[in-house]
Length: 264
Ligand SMILES: C[S@@+](CC[C@H](N)C(=O)[O-])C[C@H]1O[C@@H](n2cnc3c(N)ncnc32)[C@H](O)[C@@H]1O
Image (cartoon, rainbow, N blue to C red; front, side, top):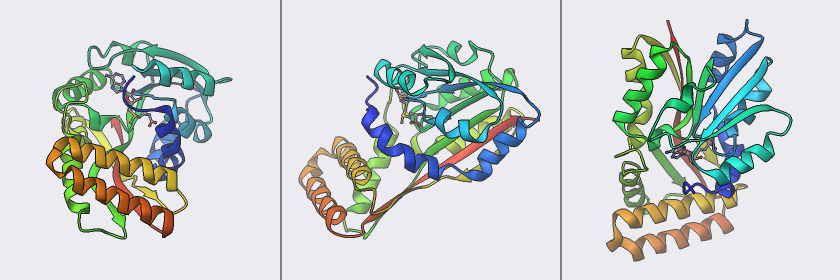
């Protein structure tokens, strides 16, 4: 178990897919326009959201390799990928990067994963990828911006605590959290890659009530972990927010970045 439930990933997926930057996706499809076959390794794959996002826009024969350390999510990925050519690896990426290169990928992808890793881990990953001159597409890396409409007095306190929580250890050492995308861009550029970057913000509209509820419960839980003494305040905030979700047009946004890094 990684702490990311299949239920949460399924709630996010339509919002993830419409948030992905079309400009960055066009960069990915354009880069491989001349290829007939494409081997793609997706790290921190969860249930295979990146496979389902890329499949409709890539016309090549696709051979996938999905890597995750959560068996329950990989089982869902297997069930979802009937008819696709997919290899699966259960691997703890904090321990070894071997799984990234096991199937000689033409492209390494990830989504909603880089913000979990530490600077040291990212340095090592970039070193190993750039050494082999493999392009890298990372979608939906949280960048520290978030907000709700209508706003409430406690929002800032919650978001401040949430962003602190983003930098706690998620299994790779202290996480980069909101710094992850910019750190990845710098590291790839220093290694001689060209990096395209674009925003891929989530927009949770009022018709996405279950998504909003689960996201805000996550913010509340994270904020209480950072500031336990504000427990009552944060629980009251959540109750008010849940009421707004149910009874008004409350919406929210979360800032992300997509990057596509290629060897030049
Ligand atoms: C936020 S989820 C994103 C999943 C998927 N990429 C998506 O966009 O739906 C982060 C994923 O990273 C995986 N993960 C976390 N730590 C990991 C580790 N040490 N090794 C491999 N995968 C890991 C989790 O199991 C989870 O599937």
